Image (cartoon, rainbow, N blue to C red):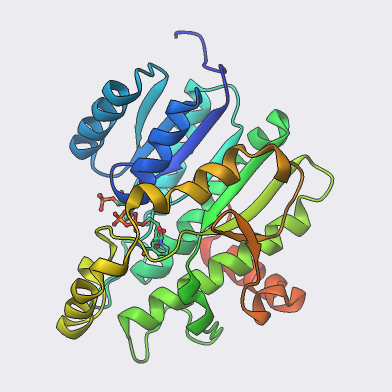
Length: 287
Ligand SMILES: NC(=O)c1ccc[n+]([C@@H]2O[C@H](COP(=O)([O-])OP(=O)(O)OC[C@H]3O[C@@H](n4cnc5c(N)ncnc54)[C@H](OP(=O)(O)O)[C@@H]3O)[C@@H](O)[C@H]2O)c1
């Protein structure tokens, strides 16, 4: 086997073939990082990687497969990553989605929660030992200002009773922010930080599966006030690279500044309850 890679700052960006993830990967490549673009669609990923290499002149850009909504795929990806790379400085859990109708993954998880949270939890925990060995290192989870309209209903996190796309998206983002703070508490003293980024209101493909026709029309109408995906990636790139936030953990950043998240996200009892629920839901991870 060829030698494992550990050059420059090794950064993983999930959902890197379009939107905010694409521009995050591009921005990091421009700054000389070794970028691992993690995608579920390898054809789209290949095109995106070639565009980034051409535009930036960077050669240390890699493409790997992972469907973050599928726990087995996450486990395969993290195993393959550890076989190929020796260190990990930055993990950006950017991949995200919304679904107009309730869908379940093969494992039986509601797909919004599976994509926007369960995959993030599993992927991060699978790579935690490597992040600890590489310290100082950073975990950045992409949430949304919409989390403030969400709820954590421990009796129905998979929204089996009455599914609503926008609500479940907001719930998943509230959960991922709460998880990030729970993780930051568990990482105190390790040299690994865990923070949240809210990218703002960004013109991407995200709205395409969100809600019904009315929501999709609303998304089209508001396009002119949305910022570009390139601008939307700025805070992710900053959170991954800025020296002024070295060692800072358990925070939410928007527009390259610290911002408050919903009150419930700071509740340590809720954080621990969520952690326990997740371990029970996902079962043992392979490490
Ligand atoms: N746009 C906004 O206004 C906004 C606001 C706040 C937060 N965010 C968050 O920002 C992040 C990026 O979204 P975006 O706006 O850039 O939307 P986007 O253009 O739709 O990008 C989402 C990316 O995630 C990937 N993805 C979706 N499901 C996946 C899965 N199961 N496995 C692997 N990759 C998957 C998509 O891949 P495919 O190309 O294969 O679909 C795509 O590359 C998301 O977490 C989103 O929730 C966006």
